[in-house]
Amino acid sequence: MTKIGRTTHIDLDEDALVEAPKVSSEDDIVNEDNDLDDNDIVDEDAGDLDKLPRRAIVNADGTVILPLLYPKTFASKKDGKIRERVFKQLTFHRLTGADQRAIAAASEDMMNVVAFARSTKISQAVMNKLFDKMDAADIADCGRVLNSFLTSGRKTGR
Image (cartoon, rainbow, N blue to C red; front, top):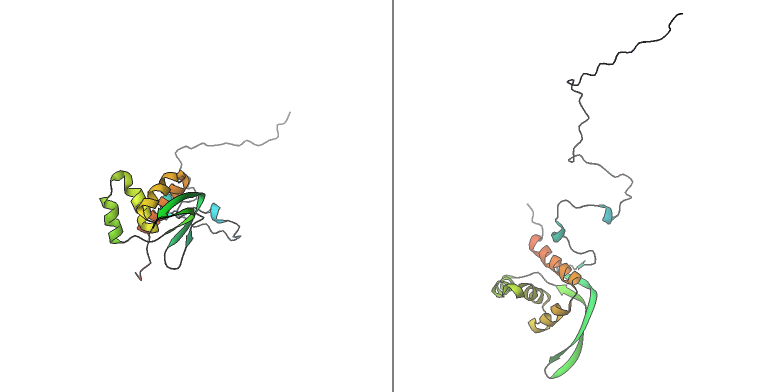
């Protein structure tokens, strides 16, 4: 009987170095199909707190309009007249040095409320009431708007 076949020897040299293709998180991957929407893109340059909420509207003058998820209504009295106030959105302005001093002078419990009042240019009494009625999601997003003012600014020619 004749054996026909081949003998294969496998040498498992575990000490041999096999160079793997170099891939790092620094490599650029280009999406040529452009089939990603904004929700698929992670901005690694900005922290979550630096980003404006998606519904925020940035105006040419630098103010930011934030439509509230949960609008609030209450009555206020000024000059002897009672009127109903409806807050569907808030308009935030960049803070000044005077605003920062007023915020710093407030008690720790009131700093957020004072910051909101100064930035929205709503009287402190009205903001106190509005803040107490606001939903926590709207408060958090208002904080993100204020934070975006502190971490961003107009670009210089550097």
